[in-house]
Image (tube, rainbow over all chains, first blue to last red; front, side, top):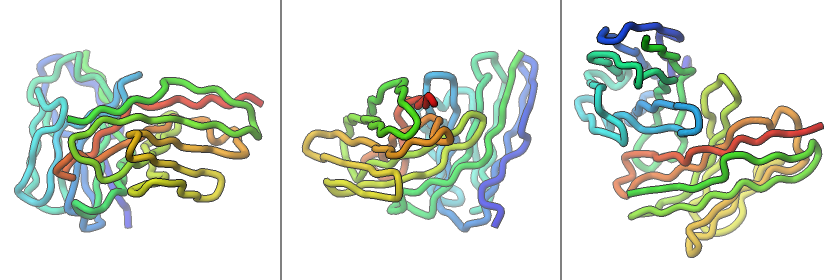
Length: 113
Length: 110
């Protein structure tokens, strides 16, 4: 199993550009989440999904969209990038509602100029 | 909502014991988890306490007191490779979301 994979590893955007961060898992996990990590701020939840076709907002959803058309994939879209979205983005998954262990992808480092 | 408080930094000596505390406020509580993250890496799951008491896994132990809304991670026989950030985490009342504390950076001196 590859676990949770994320692409790209690094990205530089200009303000106003859009892009999609890719996330995939091959563990047949129901629950998937996107977090952003800024220095001293810990991991903040952006959006999450409890199954294909079901998504909801986390703590900091503004400026981001998600969709979950398959169990495996959970892309995160930045509609119009802003410097405040410079961060490290982690995708995570877990088996289901009662499972505590969350598995993280390697992260995407995003710089918005 | 949920909030978790943990110290931002802790320093310890190689071979010693260190305790990282976490206090939480939640509208519903299932248990307390701990994750480790090395610089430049992704968080990895360490432990989970659903019930009061101490859970031991090798050099790492985790403790929970539900009545005090408090837990801690105990690291024994510290090694340089334990230098990392440690996060406590809880599920929200619906169990759909996992919320993290802001993390404790552990620095180990020789």
